[in-house]
Image 1 (cartoon, one colour):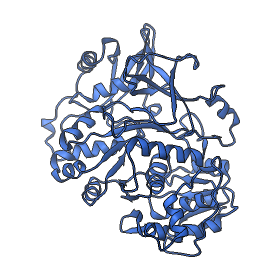
Image 2 (cartoon, helix red, strand yellow):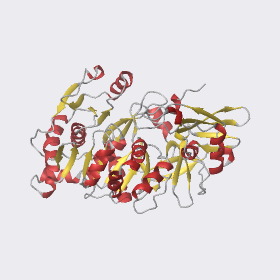
Image 3 (cartoon, one colour):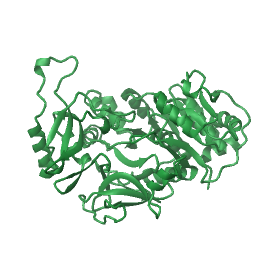
Image 4 (cartoon, helix red, strand yellow):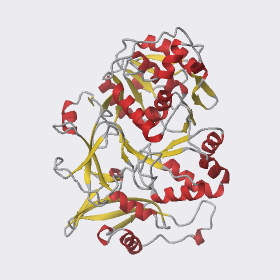
Length: 500
């Protein structure tokens, strides 16, 4: 297996070569070339050698990127920590992963849960010996990334170097991603999307990344105008872009220059897809992955960017849909038959740290990982996610219905700003479909309240869905909220909805 970062390895061995002078990382007005990154990360890697696991206080900064690269060079597993984690969650992660050190920026104030750990402050202007460390084996743990913990304490997914390389190389194939690409994003750096795809991805290709620090549409427009070729974001970010486009022609012009607009971490509503495409002439493509599997599918750069789908399996990834028994394969490619996604391939994690029971439960006997995500497949093989098995699969009137397609239909109604769909017990249907709606009444903080539109009625919304999908998919109950509960990635937390 080749080194994770060939360009960085070349800069280590030839500090005066052409590769060493190429831009690697930029955060705001601070940046590092490949040569400068090597001069900072290699000495830090020497200090980490033999340290066991190390924690990284994962702020959206240059220090975090350097810390993770140094850990990977040293062959030491890194545990990215979300700076917004609560005391209880952070304490659990530190206790479970047992790091010996924490890496942070010199100005970072660390919480008491990290008080017992040795601390190394990352100095991005330091330099020292740049001997290239020996590359660890492909199966060596690279990162331990903790899941969201929706059904209990977060679990640490042990991600080997092999999985990172396989995913990034598969995405390079799907997206025609090269060292000439410049990526811009403003994603957090404690999870797969922002860290592995958004930082390690450009470094593996020998390209560069410009991190916004904090997402803002003005920053996106500036970087795309100044030569960035790719944008990564989550649906919340693209929704803000879609909202800003009518009043910002420069934003539309800059997005039109991008080679690739990629959305992930949750489904991007079809309405936002269409608004962005209409204003910019560029279609956002979606991909599908999770902490344990990294990336599984994507719309290809040379494929049809079809709204509402996550494309086809990536090179090297096997994907199947299964019935409720988790064994019987769903062979239908009809865009209607729902099954649970199971995947197998080099992109998978190794285990849940300290949880052999959970690891065994997650895999079938023949090595398929049970994702818990429900999907259908179109006749040409495109995959459409319809929701999570635990929260988004609704069994109503003898039908298996995915919440995701109903949510997309609701969002097409002009009176709906946000939507979530769940199932609740029903004596007649088994489960009834419940829609949670944040209405769009046409008001803003400066508007005249008397001009506000009334929220759409439950009957109106039910008819709207029935016309677009099928009568059995219409919501039977509609509840109105001021906002939907969301996590840091913009995903709706359905378990936090105020059920009666």
